[in-house]
Amino acid sequence: MLMEGPVCLISTDSEGQLSVQKEAKDILDGITSPVVVVSVVGLYRTGKSYLMNRLAGKQRGFALGSTIESKTKGIWMWCVPHPHKKEHTLVLLDTEGLGDIDKGDEKHDTWIFCLAVLLSSTLVYNSLGVIDNMALERLHYVTELTENIRVKARKGSDEDESAEFMRIFPSFIWSVRDFTLELKKDNRDITADEYLETALELKTGSSVKINNYNLPRSCLRNFFAERRCFVFRRPAADEDLRRMEELTEEELEPEFLKQTQEFCNYVFSNTKPKTLTGGRTLSGTVLGSLAEVYVEAIRSGRVPCLENAVEALAQIQNGRAVEQAMQAYLTEVLDSACFPLDPVQLSDIHTQAERKAVEVFISISFNDAQQTAQLDLMRKIQSEYECFCGQNKNQCEIQCGEELREVFAPLEEGLRDGTFMLPGGYRKYRDTVLRLTAEYRKRTHTLFMCEEVLNEYLTEKDERGKNILAADQYLSQADQKMEEECLKREAVEQKQRALEEQNRQQEQVFRDQQRTYEQHVTQLLERLERERERAREDTQRVVHAKLNVRKRSSSEMLTEKHLSTEPVPVCFHTYLCVVLTNALFSSRSKKS
Image 1 (cartoon, rainbow, N blue to C red):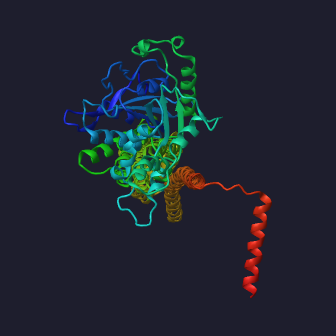
Image 2: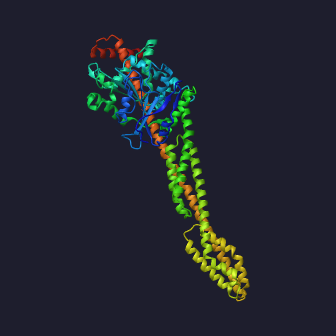
Image 3: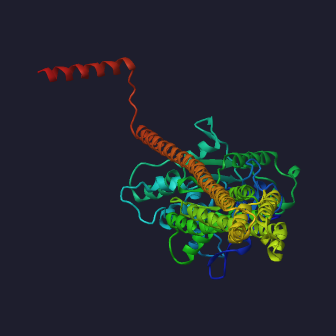
């Protein structure tokens, strides 16, 4: 759905209660493609909204404030086509500025931060100046994530909680605005990423002061597997910053524009679709429901739990998936079918309709691990197909009946006026029946149920034929007996034709059932493989991040130890002599 500008996704009332807005939810419900969600958080008046407008490719959109007041309230949403990923939607979430003095509600800020984390593929934290201890202390919300977010309803005693958070949390970008320092360390140039990692280095020790120093750094290192940093020069002079929405690119600092473009390119190329546990990719529809589940938990005084959210989403989405898939199936059949039809034609229509229904189901369904919803869909489609087959059969019978009455009208007239009761009348009766039967089959050979309708009619006339045969004095007893045998043989053949007609219909239905099963299995396996692949990627990402954390920790400990120990100059030759002497002494001691 094309949006000309942002709308409020999660609002805050005068009592501080959060709620999902219907307009935004309706927009998300219309997005069945995967969504890439980028949220920006940070202290108020730090220029968060400008970055989001640039990601949307617009000069205006999210409100830019030029006063000390926070402009954005709650969480605002802007959905635009993803510029790099086809059939993906980029969902931009601009959050209420944290630390607004007029608001004075620290818990409210915490929930806004938690919602941004839970809903995002990439979380952008925006700040001014430099990344120092004060900047990290202002990011204290990250230290409260474990208190306000749960991955599982029941935590196991041996589970690595940080690994679980790493698996579900978004990638993290620290955006430093109005950065004036040189990126140098120990007289060498460093990248912005190295600047961030240097700021996140831990101190050794266990004092309260050191623990407080390390806490936000440890949380960022342990919770966010992917971390990047972008620094931005001041975009313009102070007097021009008040009208940022009006400034053209020519009026902005070239270096700032270059840094902004690098930031946007990275986000477009590296931010992945939003997923939940198990690599399940979210559509806009699921994202809207997820926001409702989390907000309802917060309103009810509960801690948002990912496991519970997945279960709630499964109930909501899978019921909706079956309903919309059935609607797609029925619409396709009713638009394409005009009864009566040949069973093969109806089967082709059913196949096409079912394919569309499965596509709709796959795009909407969520966490149908036991295939309960998919089996329900299969049963409902099969039930509807059997109803359509029954309707088609009835319409075929009606049309065949009309053709039969028209074709056999001369026979009925002869039976009424007694023409066939005269001597030689049976032969005339038989010739009329055979001639009209051939004419009827010529008219109805493409219609299903033509043989069944004919069989019922001839069976009904069987007794009349026998009476005409018995009354015909022109035939001898031998002729009559031969004719009786002929009638029996033709009756058996006609019943066989009708039976074969029914068997073809049943075989077609069975083939359709088999193909339906195979189609559902194929779709299911493809989706499971995609989810497994994404889960493997998440696991590898977490393992890689954990190894990096341990590597950095070991390096920091060695550095700290090196700095705290007075270096003793020893030449390599002397060092080697000492090592060999100690080894020799140890060997002699063991022998003695």
